[in-house]
Image (cartoon, rainbow, N blue to C red):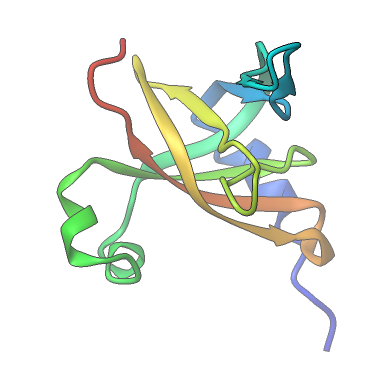
Length: 124
C-alpha cells in the first residue's frame, strides 16, 4: 500500500503565512555561562493552522489543556520541540505566539510536518 500524498492539501487549505521564531544552541561565554543564541525568524508562506481538536487535546495532560492550543501543518519546513537540549520553535499566528510542544514528521507523505503548539502568555 502506498502512502497518501497529502502535501498538496497544505497549499489548497492554507490559512496563510506564519512566522517561526527559532534559536540555535546556546553559546558558552568566557565565564563558562550559557548565553542564548539570537532568534532567527523563518517565514513560511503557506501553512494550515487551526485550534486543536478535542481528539488531539486528549493526548496531552489534563493540566495542560487550559491553555489555547493550535495544530500546525507545514510542507518542507520541520518544526522543532525542546527535546534533549534543544529549544522549541515559537510560531506567530493570529496575533499571538505559540510554543511547539510536539511535532511529527510525515516525510513519506510528501515532506509534510505536523505540530501541536500552546499559546505563550504575556506576549503580543
